[in-house]
Image 1: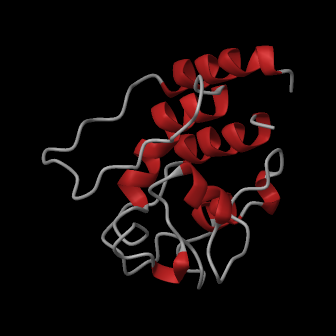
Image 2 (image 1 turned 45 degrees about the vertical axis):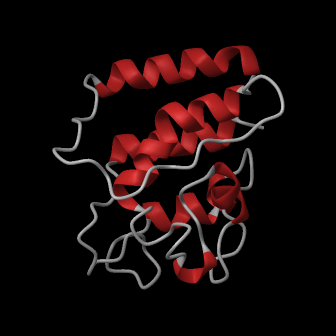
Image 3 (image 1 turned 90 degrees about the horizontal axis):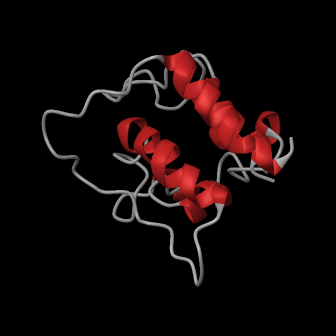
Amino acid sequence: MNRALLPLAFAALALAEGTTPAKPATAPATTPTPTKTSGPVSERERIYNEKIAPLMEKSCVGCHNAKKARGHFRADSLAGLVKGGEDAGEGISWGKPKESSVYLLAAANRSEKLAMPPKKSDKPALTPAELETLKIWIETSK
């Protein structure tokens, strides 16, 4: 997809969702690590900070953070998402959500062994709209 169309794709997705996610009643236990750059923030990083980091905070960061990186996977930074963990391999293969463990594990049925978050977790799974946001970000952020 042409980079010029990326903002339009996300605008359309936001309109399709219709509402913005509710703010949690209490402050989250951890805060996603801001992406560090040496220059202007790229479109990939901007979308990560605005759309993806809140999804990871909601469903993943509780178990995959700097203090408790289960499976050696960190969901609290862009670098951690890209790297992935020891069990599932590379987290993000840009342009290929079906080869990106972050997407595949989040999209898996919660009864599957490696589905994230696992069935026993008190964290909610990503909704179909949130999974679509993650998928579009991976597909278009080449």
